[in-house]
Image (cartoon, rainbow, N blue to C red; front, side, top):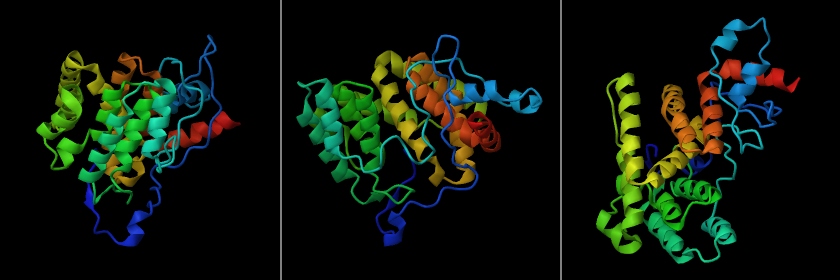
Length: 288
C-alpha cells in the first residue's frame, strides 16, 4: 500500500516517470550456484564475486544462504516480472490451469468490487491504483494460493483506502476473505517512533497474525513485493526507509515461511537500493 493520488492528474501523469538515478538499473547477472548446484541470491553472488582486494565492499554486504526456486535473475526495480497490464483474465487463467474447480466467480466479484471502490485512485507512477491489487493477486496465483487468499489479494486495500466496510466484505465474500483483508490492514497500520521498536514490534505483530491465519502474511509479502518492484516512484529517502524495512523484517519473514522465491527477490531489490554503487560495481564484475 502506498500514498494515493486522485484521478485529477493531467493526462501526461499517466505515463510512468523516469526512475531516479539513485537506483541504477542492474543488468542481468550470471546466476552463481552453491556446491549443491542451487542458485544463489544476487546478494550472495556479489559477496562471492568480490575481489580479495575489496574488503570494505565485502564487509558492507550481508550474505544470504543459498535458497532454491530462483531460476532467473530478479527484475530491475519498477519492471516487475509481468507488465503492468495484468488483467483479471490472466489471473483466472492461471488459477484455472492449477485448479479447474476453483471458485472463479468469487474472484470475478472481488475484482469488480475492488475496481469500483478504487475507481479514481492513482498510484505514484500515474497508473490506476487497480493495477496494484491485480499484481498482488497475480503473485498469489503464481504461488498457487487458495481462492480466498487470491480474492483477499484483490481486496487487500479496500478497508484501508476506500469506503468499503467489513460488513460489505463479509456479505459478499465470507468471513475467511474478510479476516485476511483485516489482518493485512492491521499490519499496514502499525507505526513506530524508533527503529528498534519497529523491528521488534512488527515481528511480534506478524507472528500473532500468523498464529491466527498464515495467509495474512502471504498476502502482505506479495503486497510488499509489488511495492518494492515499483519503489523507483518513491522519493529517495522513502526508498531507503522502505528498502531497509524490507531487508530487516520482510526478508526474514519470507524465509521463515519457506517462500524462498519471494525472499530472494525482496532481498535483491532491497540491496539494490541500500547499496546502489556497490550493487552496480559487483554486477559488472559478475558479467566479466
